[in-house]
Image (cartoon, rainbow, N blue to C red; front, side, top):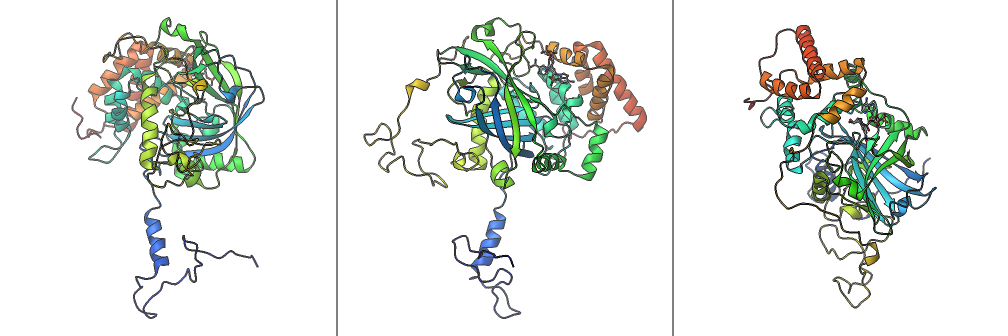
Length: 498
Ligand code: NDP
């Protein structure tokens, strides 16, 4: 017989009966005093927390980053201090638009959020499986996300809203060319790259700053689904990513990525033909070659998905000495909005949850708030600063060098001086003819039912990438219309007036 421990209430008292409620006689109603029953029901009511508005559906695992090449001349961050150095990490992948119950194998950008538990505190690199994004100005972000979510009246997702927004936001062309290409629908998280996407900075012991881009190249190779393949997968399982990632790690198949950086000397930022802080642009490899840094491996599943993956809180605000931000407008906004999202959905002290807790002592003067359970600092008298009782103090030796800012404060038109067509063209040029045909067919499927005026506006942008691009999408639309019969005259967007 298995020796079983005694069940207790959450206050630790032994439970005498977990099968039968306390009732007034065998046929009578339950008693109010049956607190064990009340506690079970009350806890069940509180089992959900607000899901993330963006990146709600996710999969994650723990692992390590091992440094294989020395880049300590660029950064003083101890995570990169020497070859052979290993740092524990948590990686959460996600889709962007789908809710918690959405199917995994949907065409969407994937989140690629890393937490490095370094000896200088947590460093979070909260990126995607694409090197660029749909918008470059954070003022547009909530509107963009609205178009990916449900229409307020129909409660359905609206292709019209998506194309209405994209066709008026040509900075999205680079990202949508990726999204509707093969890499827009990976088979599972281990078969895709990760990118820090934003421009960050490195700074070294001499106080010199370099701009940096982070890349994580899959060592499993790229594997992607066509729309038709994904429909079959979703018909059989909505959880295909969790099955592959969790199952693979349980079987001892540990996925790996090669960690690379691109480094730009600080003053080059004034010289590049493109804005190096624009999230809709990459830095061409010919200008800034990839420098190999290390290997990322995932090798341990969470013991409790909710505690360790759902409650994992990543924020670009978390940097460590030697790593800094950049003038990237989107990054600047995310520094606020990610930490703010976690305060809302997890609570004031979300960084004290075990999965988010740094592996170094945490000493600050934030006080009280819901679920305050951290110890005093180091005495109860040290609850303000400066103090005379030995409380923690600042350390000027980790002061970041000044971030160079050029220009007067104003609301600059973010389209001025930005070429929205050249880099999407460079990407499209990488695709062979068969890949281009799949791209056009994916667009055609995603545009079904969208009003003609919106499509015309989008085709005009494709035309500027290349006339063949626009012609390819038009031909694919005609082919799809011929195969599906008369066009659906009902717009999927109640309010589309174009
Ligand atoms: P390169 O030829 O030096 O690099 C091309 C990059 O594109 C490689 O990183 C490669 O990733 C990636 N790539 C290859 N095939 C595809 C594909 N089918 N779908 C998506 N990405 C693919 O050229 P440049 O650096 O001059 O960049 C040209 C274009 O490549 C850019 O406009 C951009 O769209 C795209 N790209 C560039 C990246 C960069 O950081 N420079 C990063 C990713 C894409 P992999 O190594 O995994 O094959």
